[in-house]
Length: 234
Image (tube, rainbow, N blue to C red; front, side, top):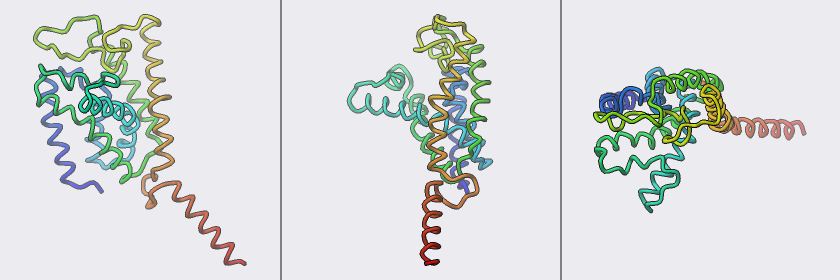
């Protein structure tokens, strides 16, 4: 169902991105949820797994939509909405490094296409919850806190990955214990990011293996069939 050329092209992109990101940002950078999504999507492509694709659509669709809005707003009118893409316009970062980060634009589009093609798996929120429960504590243990200086040899080293030390990136939260912040962060992702997207996907997308395009279409067709039967009885 997934064209071979797409799988090969995606693999080639990862083969370029991984060494470049590793060199400039360090390996901890790959714990960002958007970067995790890159690797899980790689597995989803080759395995043609609706579950893997669905889980990553949950975690990045809303955040990457905000990323795109911020990026294009600043690109067109030089007014940032949130500032999350400010690094894309820093002249001291190599252009090729910033160009690789444009995957934030096309990855959610690819995942929407994959989910429409493979179907939306209703188990996706459970899988994504398990991923969050692993990735966020690892981010806390391995990434630099916001008040620690980066090394001179790595000025863009990943810091406060996934906001595990607090929000915004430059500030450490002090209002609650660190473990409770992580629990709240997981709860935020589940309640404000994953479940709203899950509700929309459940409504609009077909389950895996279904030939119809949407549950709403199923309901419309069922109503039409019932109406035709009643007219036939008359």
